[in-house]
Image (cartoon, helix red, strand yellow):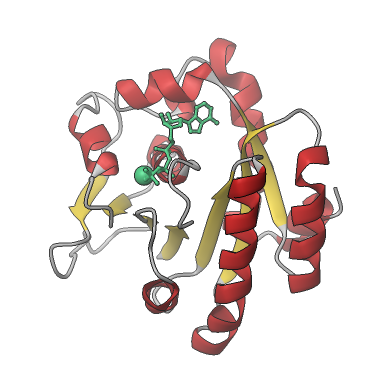
Length: 217
Ligand SMILES: Nc1ncnc2c1ncn2[C@@H]1O[C@H](COP(=O)(O)OP(=O)(O)OP(=O)(O)O)[C@@H](O)[C@H]1O
Ligand SMILES: [Mg+2]
């Protein structure tokens, strides 16, 4: 079982969007997938509630209500964090997972919050769990990486990679409304979005060659 934590204390940066879309990717491929919502707002669980019955199933858990019990055959577990998670709590969560995804939007404020969050938890990741990999996904990204230049430099110094970028796309908004992910939208409409996930998925799955290629951008 591989577990993935989506976290950033900045609100609205795309945690739920990334967590739910990642869950649909695995579900589409027929993998037994669980989504754990750690946010009191329960946005991931709301999304799951409107999910069409004919789409592949995703197990949903309110992670704030005690221990979770995914099916024994569960292959992927995705944790959707709330905004304002403090770094001590994040450090405890990191002990549970294999992958930490930090979505960041291209505003100066968002990047400042992300930089100080990453700096704060990078040491904790190394201390608490040698196995977890941590990477940043640029969300609602501009066409070029220019606006992320300073953050990219900072991340490089900390040895945290930029693993990919997702454009601003109506497909995410439409999919979120109907409980699906972009991997369940017709290819003719969402191909550019799906393509952007390739390096991210490869990295999440531990394919380090692609990770290095993206980090150079
Ligand atoms: N790449 C994108 N393109 C278009 N809209 C997006 C994209 N990513 C996120 N959004 C939209 O931005 C809003 C905030 O995203 P989301 O809920 O995923 O953020 P969050 O980090 O989970 O927020 P919170 O901190 O409140 O939990 C949502 O309406 C979502 O549909
Ligand atoms: Mg959310």
